[in-house]
Figure: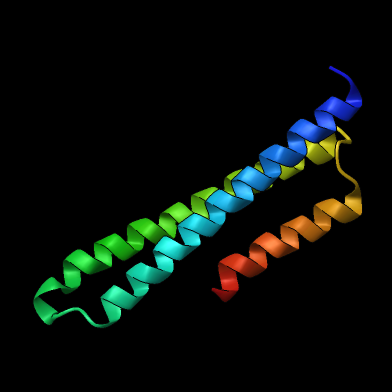
Length: 96
């Protein structure tokens, strides 16, 4: 596999993982809304669901960071691109 092919593969992988992170963030945000307005009898159940969604977001964020770290170590993305993608991912996790 040529370097150009490797770069293309890693870029597709990064985009896929970013999309998956967006999906997990959306699920977490929906779970937050449901938790806010749930009846008191369902609080524990909805809290468990929210916790699971938050864990999924954290796990996906860490996985994406691992993909980015690997891409950087293999010199498939630049230092600037690495930094920018990490910051974008963190901002999504924190801000949403």
